[in-house]
Image (cartoon, rainbow, N blue to C red):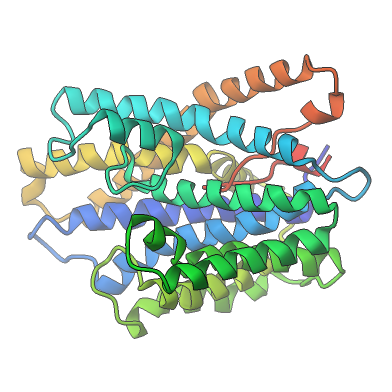
Length: 368
């Protein structure tokens, strides 16, 4: 079965979002080299917007796959099982990889304890996370728990609106409480980006559908230009509220445009789909390339040369590693999980295991 246009477009956009994040981190690492022309602040910072694209996509696709047109909506338990079996296995493998690197001398500045391992494994928010980028997965899991609870309402509209109300209320309440680790997590308005995706999916289901991919052009321009006009203290990203507005809202326009992208018909678009399929693996494994890149900069002659030509190589290697892990590790794991779930008595429960955003969602089977 060929993927529908909206699924093809979302898949391609997932790949773009993952590459954005990889470019962002590669450019940040390259700043340690004083030789040659360095990446400008706005460009280095802009790549962090890949996370915001992922969050908006996640909100959209969760509503899309949970309320299929010709069958019953997902039950909370089924939804959470699919999410957990999609996110955790590869993530746990990467956590083991980080611990292994730490034991042989990489990540020397990282302090790994039993507590940080347990929190990391469960994706409980912690500043001592084994994998730095896992903070986004903590938000993903939190969103999944809220959204799953609304599935008991068995209504697309109710799930979208109640999830949005709960997330908004949590942000407002957390901002009124004393600062702390948990309140800091809950008070971040970046969670509203999931709601943006939910509302876009709701509009899509109601027949409000863009007819051209050109919608994405102004969205991308606003995202890339935002660091030029929004004050920020580091290249890690924009301040939370400014980020949600300057990157989250334009991400809605970008996603709306990609919903009209046609299924791949040439090698380039098929490769873009492959990168989208592998986006979760790319996202989780690219830190391994980055830590190696950072070590080479510090300990070899590579650090004495301009990085203008090195950064694209690092990005390419990160993407290639993610694709390889997707093909040889992630896909076999998913196949095993599907086989196990098919052995259950309810065949509908095991019919599909949609991909996560975060970061990724949606393949052909999501539309079935």
